Length: 379
Length: 238
Image (cartoon, rainbow over all chains, first blue to last red; front, side, top):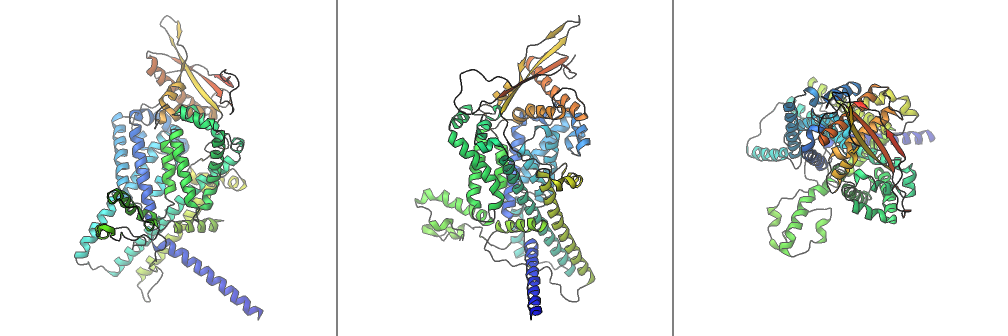
């Protein structure tokens, strides 16, 4: 009797395990997860890098060029020690450097637009590696994050939404709907399916790596702060606000610094948010935490003059918003834009997660005129 | 440990997916009977590739974790593996203002010397490199890396490789000294023009006063006033 019960229990355990394995397999191979999130990363980091390159246009030679105090020879010497690599040191010519700079601008722009995204993502990663490693002693945490993300994005299918590739695919599907389907051999079909599955798996692994990377970032930033006496004493932000190179608006920094209570509370909140981040991602608590982190990063951007760093962090946070939020976003924007004409408030239903196409409203035809990205539409 | 991280990550990704939509997953394992050998080989290849992807992801996450975490028994034991995997491209450091933010401001000053044809030496007055950076940052919503990071990180690199004295004992220390000297020489040349053969730096470290009402009105006294040796400059020499 006891033996039988044991066998039932172990059979149950095996079935449970098999179910879990099947669930993980389906999740991994079923379909690409968080396609909007990946596209937000592509657009965000493409745009940030483009803005960064343009902002440093007057200083480009000083930072990455042959005239930099970190001379091409020094860079080459360091590469030999560290294993870094940069296309920028292949020649000391000014013309070559200007060409690379223009190429970097074009690559960032096209990556941002999502044109031939997979190829461009590799090119973008090479650009970011090259410019990062050439000026490695001028980088900060924001540059480091952009570099890591550009590497992970190569794995993802980040061009499936809000991109030129997506537009081309849509047009192709529309044409294919009228043209007769071409007959393919069974093996070709299977090969195609296998390729799709593998792309999906690589994408999902990439998104997992990105999520883990952001968790490591916040977790370690928070836990290392916990060990600091100044953070514990509530005065850490006083010292941050008084760093001369990170004080673009001295009067503003001074004003904040005068409020001891604000400085202490903001300091504690920073540490708590960062430590909590990896643990709140599995529940609804993540939304208030993400909102507070957004506020924190906007504060850093303005008060410390670090818009690039803050932008990189905000884009990384945005990947944790669900696809149904992004699918609903254009619809929400239209509503907000149209509201003044109508003079009607947006109904509460409009922001509920169960987004439905606009049901006409007083205008009548808006539901058919504007196609809305529905949650759960077939991918 | 690996399965814990893995399932956590998978659950997270599931959360950020498009939610309540019902999913139709084509079952990739449904193998019809009597399939040709090529299809079987394809399936086997696919399974292997998927397993490799998953294993690589998990390994990457563990090794990056060991790289980011404080030095511990595990990361010490596997440090060759961790370093081989993480460096150079996945190197990262998230000790942002941690464990404590810096409680000092550094002011880096420079002066140049030029030896005339008659053997006389003309030394320029000190000029402040950091103040130039500071005024470039002030009232700028998007300051340049050249103002915020260049000199600051070059000095940090110099101190890292030199320590307390100014003797370059390693190759890296020599490189950092050359870098710092190049930055100072470029700025001196842009500022005062002319030719010079030597440059000297002075680094004044000023403490940020403790919070609370200021006691008296006197400026903070430097905690360190480090005078570096004269360095020969070739970039802007004769």
